Length: 434
Image (cartoon, rainbow, N blue to C red; front, side, top):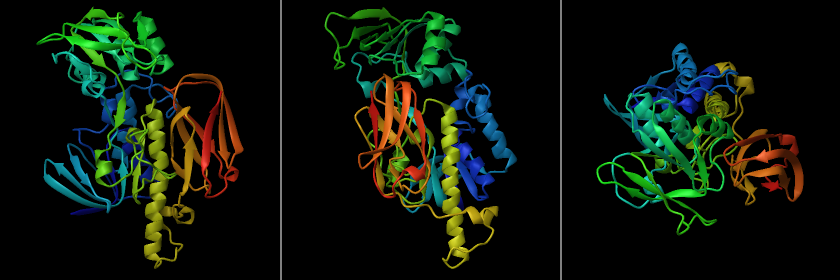
């Protein structure tokens, strides 16, 4: 049995950023658990550049971006254990993990969920046909090429215009493969505009919207796929079928937060994000359990993942230090110098007000607020829109409006809200006015 103040599950960009920030804020008793053999998360296989412009003001590859935080973890002597799989988390913040040294039992005062996300597979979208070799998710194909120097195939079709799928269209082309096309079931692209330009248009790879794969052909190895147009209800249109010979089908059909451990702990999930419901402190519905990064909501930029982890660290530090303050003063607050931050430490405010959205918004983070503190709201729109105004209302009174020339589902929108605009304890309504 080991005890720690803060246990971080996941050594990717969210977990690493949270650990570094916690250490800087005076929390010394931290432990990171990572299931892979090294820290860095998915960034280890993302060798393309474009990372870091927001966080570091320069463009970096994925491994370079991760290494910035890994170096800080090493310099600050933050302990971590790799090649370790967490198998259970309880609502009392007891964590059980399987490692090469056996079963670990760790009692934490606070748990940070930073497990990232996983890809939706062929089974999740129910493509009919045989089950030959040659069907990969985009992340698996990326790992074969970038980590193991293995070429998945030569004649490629990509289903889904997610960012990883478009990046893999470029990567496969650069490695000598022929990418027939990228097909997207939605009437609009699901990835960032810059990736459409840099990964598809620059390489003359066509993108077909309102199309999907309706049949897979091949016994041992994939031989061809049948692609059909779909109507506004995503049903295949009879007579629109076209066969594309190929030996590889890459799926980029969405990401899902990795929340099995969250459910084990009793954390309530949001049906829209598939991530935890959190308040303005990134605290879940279980006290002392926090979540940030792609396990909370799927981000479009890793910079936002790290910044979210750092913001979470503010709240976790206050949670830990205010608890120590109460212990050291017999529960009366005290004024000692814990971690050099005591004068700034305050207990986390209760968040009872809900954030309510209209049908144009898929979700918001956070979902609950206090109305007493500044916070930043993250949201996504349901469809592409131009010349819109995002309104924030309390009891039908508009307290803030933000005008935007365009709003895309692929791009997360982040808007700061000042506490002086809010009335404590009252729900906040968010609307998109076209």
